[in-house]
Length: 300
Image 1 (tube, rainbow, N blue to C red):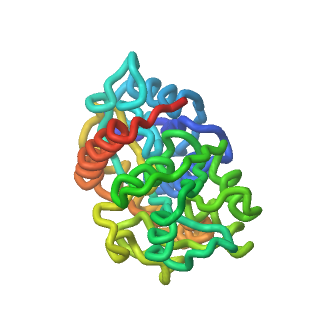
Image 2 (image 1 turned 135 degrees about the horizontal axis):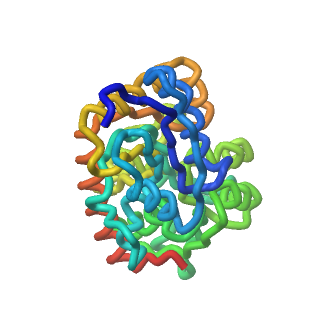
Image 3 (image 1 turned 120 degrees about the vertical axis):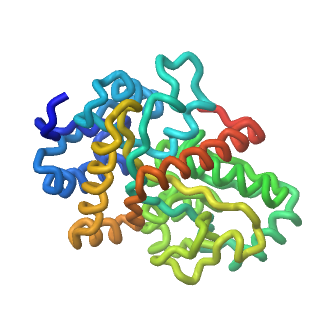
């Protein structure tokens, strides 16, 4: 391999359609990464099959640091949802960095009688029919948060999958569904219409919703599960190039333009190191596998 790197534009492949959350984050950090690396970072969408099309293309690419993947939490759940893939998620990639966290909350419509998570739990346990909760779709991070909530509390809720977080939030605002596990960014219009967040599915309180308790604060143990965007390189990419890619991501996240945009999206910049992101993948992947099996989550 040539000693000078990068020697040409870097392709950042995204397994989801233009305009979605992953694509938005990729296009937000690409210019700053390019400035830090001295080469353009080109975002290429290859959507389909819950991100596996793009993941397969990156797994099969030359491991020279010129091709990377930006994916979501689906990167960690897909191994438990798909059979017969041409690559092994566990061995095909070198984790580079978690770019952002999209905090998930349990929100209720404006006329829902419970004002706190304690009141919600009491209400749900006293009702004959299950409370409905909307999510962006089957096997999404938010669906898994809803299933984890049921396991941790012993409740049974009725899942209503939508085709995206915005649709679920719209029906929550309209009162079609009672509650929603959804990202804070997707729920912003619903909050404006009177919907309320009762609990954050995050390790710490969300800066934009400081009054909303975490699961641990509400007495729901081990209740953290939110969507992310992270960058991966092919497994055999030289470690020094993986490090430089991470440093470029951190540099992009440090710019005020990116920080302001992330605030408007209700997303939290992370920029973790390859070692930190590898640990996250190992631990969170195992947790998701256990959850998917326990809840019987399927894509269809």
